[in-house]
Image 1 (cartoon, rainbow, N blue to C red):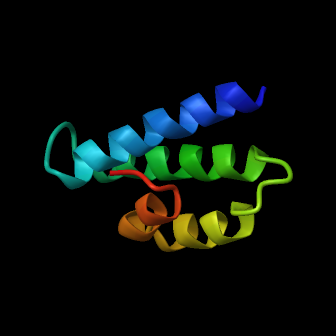
Image 2: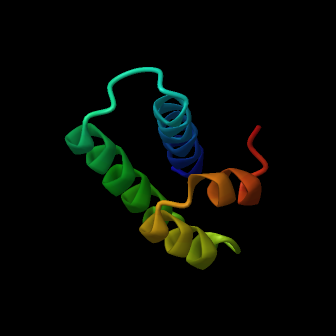
Length: 73
């Protein structure tokens, strides 16, 4: 289960990264859907040391800080 959540989170990060780079659809509705799905996936992580901090960053939609916390390039 954890590996599926991790994969989902990686895909959502990719979608947010592409969107922030101006690639792909940038509609507010799509962005809102990606962020809410991302929050749901993070909230589903159990016993993750970064879960609380990630949820705070997702609520702020602080994509650079999320990437930094998750060591994404």
